[in-house]
Length: 224
Image (cartoon, rainbow, N blue to C red; front, side, top):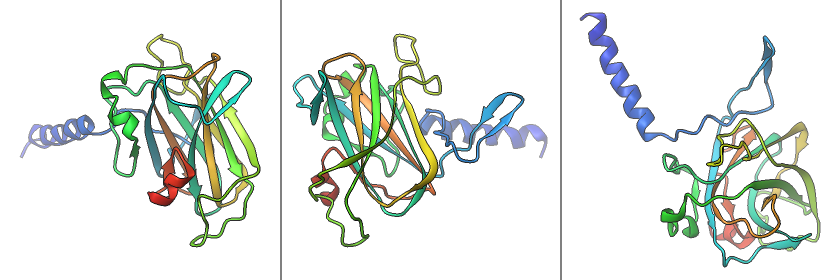
């Protein structure tokens, strides 16, 4: 068997595999990054969970502050982690599809013909100031206080929006231990008003955790 007979089947497998996979670049972490010849090189998160959603013109915001409308995505981190990363992309590219373990909301599935609609996103991350114990925690618990951990606006690490501008955000927080518990992502847009359109929010943790549940409501975490 010559080298051509070996290479062609391998290429066919690689092309076939890449055609079925998500084509977003790997979501990389802050931990373990190195600087080589002035360029930052990062290691991908061991696991990521994607949340695919669509915000319509008639959807009521979870919170309104200073004329900005905010929509929440809740998730539970079952163990202490060293890093939490979030990446939001709007709109969801037509070549990107949910992978095993990702979440596609009914709103996203019902608006596939409108997935090209997008907004200029802003993301924030909060932690619920409530006790957490795995196995007995009630995800629907009333939270009196949310601790703000960080926010992000624009990043050149993500793909550009249809405008050609790099306005999709990336947020990474690290440098200490983040306790197990209830967290939420806050989504808004830089312009005052209602963010309208499709988006995918990717969540990465270190260490990587399989089976992270994500929902637009706390009650949805109980049902999922």
